Length: 338
Image 1: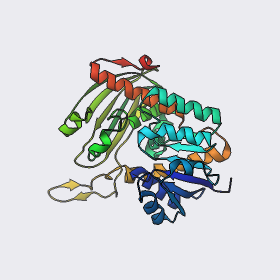
Image 2 (image 1 turned 180 degrees about the vertical axis):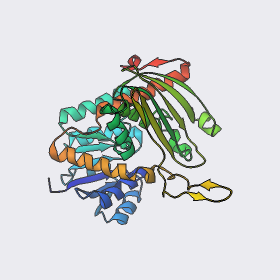
Image 3 (image 1 turned 60 degrees about the vertical axis):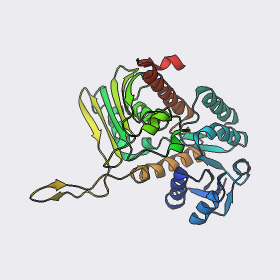
């Protein structure tokens, strides 16, 4: 391995573009050396933008290239497990966007392949690296707010993704909410034991026609006895809404939205401020850099990654339980899926 971790990006879509820019501009310990995407010209266009020498439509060939130390998988969810297995077989370290797969069998198969190969696998739950959520987790873990009793998480997108994406994403519980299942575990230091969902279609009837919902509130019970709520909607008129609070026996800690500036405008008729940062690319820019730096550190020091395949499995089970709860209109224990 050279002084810099040589990374190949697999997938030149929206999140792939975010990671390409982050590696090139923000992570000096890594080098983006190649990009692959099955779509013609997608990899070449992104490579040209960031001065990357190698671009190809052959993802598997790139994964097996001996020049590569690690792969970053940013392709559609239904390809993640296959690419993880291919990378593990090639002895490449792996950073993969969430989730590993949409079912437990494929998830477990990919995790087993990584373990057998002895390579690093880190999952892209970027919110764990956001300074706001890191500070909240520290306060809980250090006992500053006493015994945690309740967590509230609000996560609302500015607009729904394209229908072409919704049809293959696994639905709101395995796509959008997957981050919230994970951050709930992260903040509370405890696994989710049970979920109970109330949800529906309040944004776009086409989402319902695709077999999904766009709005839900889920009640959580944790193994440590604490409770919580997750509030998700595919559309918030004012932008990207990302808030959370943990309430404990000795206090509470909360985080609100991030804004493009800290100004407040006061006049005789109104006190106002600008809208929050509009979407995840801006809101979590620092977190994306931190998670890639963490991945590089784990690989180069041969230490466990900050977010593991086990964490991905736990978030997946929560999402599967949530869907069952919505469909069957009952509380669902995650133990039903173990």
